[in-house]
Image (cartoon, rainbow, N blue to C red; front, side, top):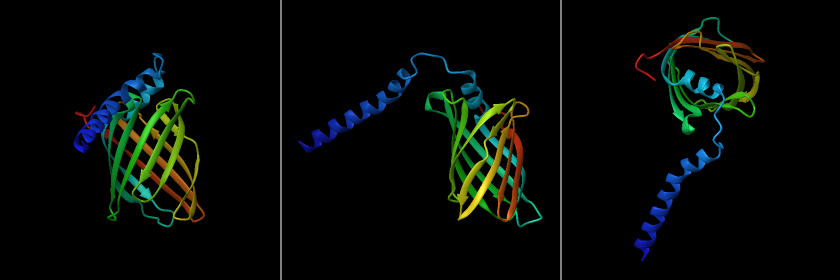
Length: 186
């Protein structure tokens, strides 16, 4: 009897999981998504390699970064999930996971991020031409108060530029990286 109940639970769970995507479709009411949804998803899709510099507030010499980003379509195509890995010339390594999408209700782009360094936060911004300019973000990391000015631009098809300036009581840290999408990537 226990085996039969277990099998019934598995069948019911499988049926529920298969029905969830269909339930999500019905929520849209059949209305077409605004073009910013597609613009946001399409901008990030694919595998990217970016290079550039990161300068800590207490350092005069920048570290050279190589960043790899892999973004895939998510949530029935209305967002992307991106995984980023980064290595610097000083031997540092970090991993970041983000979900990025455009909210038609708020007319804002949301970038929710968690990193291996213990940072968890959300950026909110708007498209200004080919750049997503995020609002200034006040956050706390490792007990320090930080204000971040952050943007992601797409100056030409297949090119991404990420700029960040973080202000703390100790000074200013900057990151400026740029690169291309792999040609065989979506």
